[in-house]
Every structure is written in C-alpha cells, then in structure tokens.
Image (cartoon, rainbow, N blue to C red; front, side):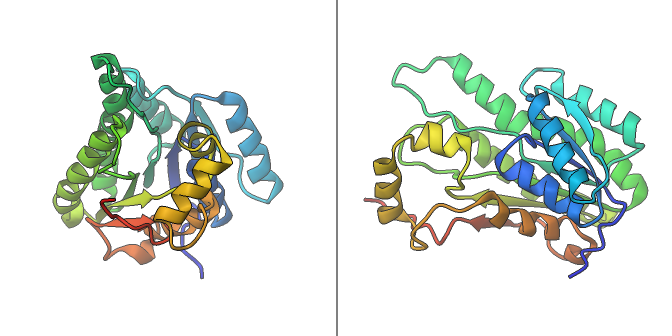
Length: 252
C-alpha cells in the first residue's frame, strides 16, 4: 500500500531507540523526509546512516532535551528553520517513572515535563503552520494511564490522552488529525532494563497479562503510526489505539 507520504516533512521525537526509531525508519521507507530528535546524538547519527543505506533521504538531526523548559520551543524553531514546515508530528519522547514510597516533587515534575508538557508545547508551536497548510497529522505515543503500581508517567500519559481528544475536535476543521497510540510492553531498553530487568519478571508478566504470549516489537507499532500519519487516515481522529497483544486489564 502506498501511504502517499512521499515528500511529507515528518518530525519524530524520542527517535534514538525503540518505537521512535522504528517509526522514523518506516516513514523514511515511505518516501517522507524525516527529522529525528532525541538526546543521544550518536544514536541519531547511526539511524541516519541506516536510513540512507536503505535508499532514504538523510534525515535532519536535532539533539534536544524536551524535558527542559525551553526544549520543545527550541526544537520547533530549529525544525521549522531547517525544513520550512512540519506536516507530521510524532510525539514519542517519554519514559516510565516507577516511584519509590518517598518520591519527591522533582520526580513528578520531570515526568510531567517529559511525558505531557513537551508534547503540548511542541505541538502548539507547530500547529500554526499546519493550519496555514490546511493539513497536518499529530500522533501522540501514550501508554498505560492506569497502573497497579505508582508510576509518575501514568497520570502524565492520562493528561496527554485527554488533551489530545480535545485538540482533535478543535483541529479537525483545519484538516489536522490528532490520535494516540497506547503501546503495551514493547521490547526496548526502557522495558527490558527498567520495568522488567529479569527474564523471570518478563515471563510472569506475560503469563498474567498478555494473551499473545510475548512482548511486542517496535516494528509492530511503527506501521500503524505511519498509516495514521498518512493522507489515507484523514477520517480517523480523536482516538486512542492500543498495541498490546490483547493485554488484559484485570484487577488481581
């Protein structure tokens, strides 16, 4: 299927690894011009070489700390200056923040800055250009908004989903769609090292929660995001789509 993304200017945050990396590669394979942003410049350079090696155009690379107060606006300004506009925004930067019992305000503030406020600020900076073009795609990568254990990311992701739905209604008349993807357990450094650092913890979680019997791969999330970023998804907006192997939400 041709997603008709050739020439579209796409900005992907959190692109150095995991889902963001896979999304950037998928968009580039569809002929889009991809701008990639993350804190790890070396990983972004490696991704750029891989995209070029597969016949894609060399991405624009931006090193950015989106949790910093001026990070989102600085990235937006740099991307607009370099590309002249952004047609597709993939807000993927974020991270799980399991909490100790005595967690301080700094952990909560950092989590909201990274998981919600960065996406809001970056989107608000890029929406005027999309409105002027009467076309745009915004896909926000969320996650579990309710968890069995305290995690500062969950309320932030809930805020991201709530804001996204209202924004979708506001922007629909301008030809701009806003959707969320809620990944379950997707193999990544964060999942494997932080949430499930042992094989036993992974196996136990899978047996209790995932009918598919395994964690997913970033490449199983990326095609859906690429579709939502395309002209063919024009009538899909304001929704959240889980990609979680049928994960069960049971209280046990």
